[in-house]
Length: 96
Image (tube, rainbow, N blue to C red; front, side, top):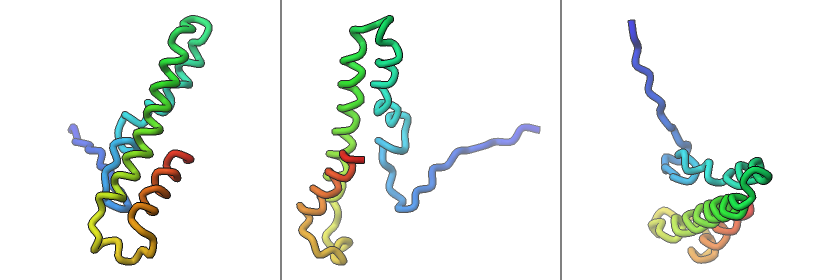
């Protein structure tokens, strides 16, 4: 008897992040693939780093944009300005 298995993605905050919750997250490791094939395909190393850094910057900008687009009523508990929180979120994501 066959049973159907479904994979659900339960998030603690309930927000889907395409950079962390999809297969796109593996683009952050593209430089590792480029380095592993450095001697066979040396021209692929630089583009692999471009993909990896592009992923990191896009994830950071997305985190900052998400903070900037939050509803003001939700963030009343914060004492910092929205721009400051967005800059902190962007820097934190880029640093991580």
